[in-house]
Length: 149
View 1: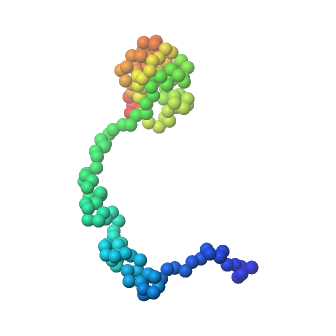
View 2: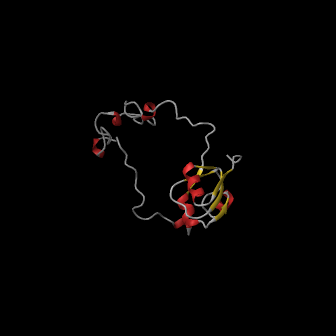
View 3: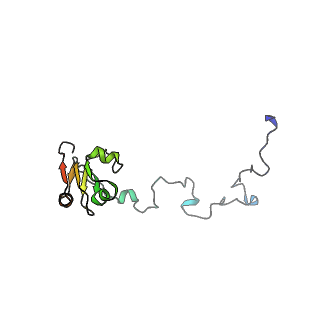
């Protein structure tokens, strides 16, 4: 029955009653040691207090960094990834997203890491000069769509 339930033996302890005289074993300084900030009444200090040293929050520079208001974060795709995972053909951003090479949420930039031997016709938002040159050299083409960026 519920009224007969009791906690396990040894799981409940009485709290230590400090500052009740020297005979109790924790009188005089009441377990706080002698002198110093920790022994005083109201010893707790505010958050971020570092014992009189200039706190970290005040040592930081006042102003944050600067983010250009019209900066565009591009999603990148490299030539080596195309060479490895995509058969030759014509692709736009949606087709590359369907192949799970990019998420399709941001503008796409083609970068020139790696080499290409397949013939690609790509439609992307931006491309580096080296990437364009490599695609054209392999017999493909790169079309830049300006209105998406």
